[in-house]
Amino acid sequence: MNKYLEDQNTHMREYGFSELINARRVLSKPLIELPLRDEQRLFYDLSRRLRRFAGHTALAYNIIPDVERGKFRREECSARAANLRDYIEHKGNRNVSITGVSGQGKSYLTMHLLRKFEDRQRIIFSFKPDDHEVHLGIPVIDAKECLPNPFRDVNAFSEAYMTAFFGEKVSSGIQLQQTPAFLQEIASQSSDWKSFMKTIGEKRKSASKNQIETLNAIEQNVKSLIVEDMGSVELANESTVFDFSTLPTKQAQNFYAELMLRQIYREMEDRKRTDVLICIDEAHRLTKSYHTILDVMSREIRDKGMLWIITQNLIDILPEMRANFGTKFTFKLGDADLQLLSYNSLVRFSVSMLQPKQFVDIEFPESNSFAPVLTYMPDGSEYRETPRILAAVREAGMEEGAGGRGKDIDYREEVIRILSNKMSYATEMGKEISSKYGIEKDQAKLRIKSILEEMKNNNEVGRVKYLREGKPIVMYYSKNPNLSNLHTGMQSQAVDILTELGVAVNRISTTGERRAFDIETDFFMVEIETGLKHSLEDLKERIAGTNLRVIIIVPNRELIDKYQGLGERVMVMTMDSLREILIEPEKKASYK
Image (cartoon, rainbow, N blue to C red; front, top):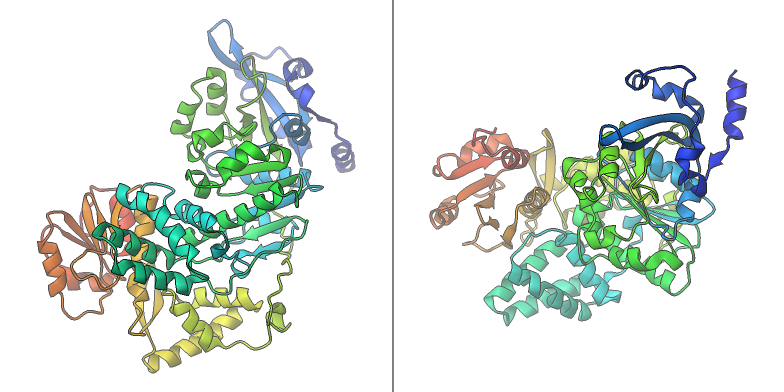
């Protein structure tokens, strides 16, 4: 019996585009040759019926108008395997979006479709650690080791910055208007990040008050983008997965992904690459911004290749961009997305009735007459533990050794380099060094711990107990008098949380501004307190100078008591509690 099923699966005929758009005629054979009423058929075990389609996409049933009741109903039929590659390629527009709430099967379908196009050059952008795409058997490039130089194209630099930091409203209108011009001017005078920061300082000397605020915000933001050893990415004409998950911040990941996209698309325009399939997972990182190159690509890529994007919500894609996808495979959506489908009540009803792993194409050519519901039946190969293949990326001046990255590792220098840019903890530093040198994470972590203990005893680094996602960790920071990366790191995290929750940030102060709160919004002020200061007088002055509520964020619960009693408008909490109190504003300042 098993042999019969395997043979049937191997030679299974898949229905293509012309048959799909005539699915009501093709699938006219009844499901069961028994006189069952419609309500009884709905309880039929669909998953058992479709089990023989493992490894294929199957047509499960149709949604059709119900003439008698004036609504819509489900029409059962004999299932058929569907050839989605033929379906996509026979549309004039081969761009594909895959949307749906979490846990519905987007990853299964994406992996299946990418394998269907294995004869094409596939360039995939991945943002999650160890995500499914890195196990496709396609060579993986750690984006952190081969970033494009942002100063080679000042316009691309400006647009990538705006995409990373202004995907949603996070600053005042004046600052937003001034930022692109400043970015292009400063970038044109810079060859690297060091000269970029120096030019900001020089501009600040002759700037107005509003311009100084803009320059301060740029200076603060670019700290999260600074990565050493940048170089031009030379890609062969082969399929590649870019793994951006090792970059330290979401803004850095989005910034360099945008730069990488622009470089690749420029090569496509120059016909150095032809008929390329570009697939972007977690696409909402870019598609919310009017500055992303994806808007242009969605309109103009058709004669050069295909653009595929995967994200949870249709509303994450700008309307102008959304219209340029010829196929929109859609799993179950939330209420806000369903409102977008009001133009076609049959399609909206179909999407609202979908079960896990079921999807429809909301751009189906015959969607005014019926909507075929499809489902991908996994066969186990999608999540197979295949090895992660590292693409060869050679850097000048490095001897071949462990991981092709040189034989000797100066752990002390690596720790100093990391802590000069941000606060960090041993596990995170170990992961970064292991990725850079191609060694085991545990090996790097053990060496780092001994180095950190030595540096702490020499008063070169400080450490503080830090609450991160509800778990206490030991966070290290540089004690260089010119650095304050513990404070800066907490400030950046707070800005990320506010931005993610849709809170408009009016101002982000730079280190050393004694009279300004660290983060200012329309409704409250945020002050970062590391617990390292002995006097609270300057903080009391700032609190007295505002009528708004003040939120003080500390690294751990033990420090909360130190800042209690500063007034009725003052709330003291950890970083985790900031998210909780904004999601549930009725909770008071009793977070510990």
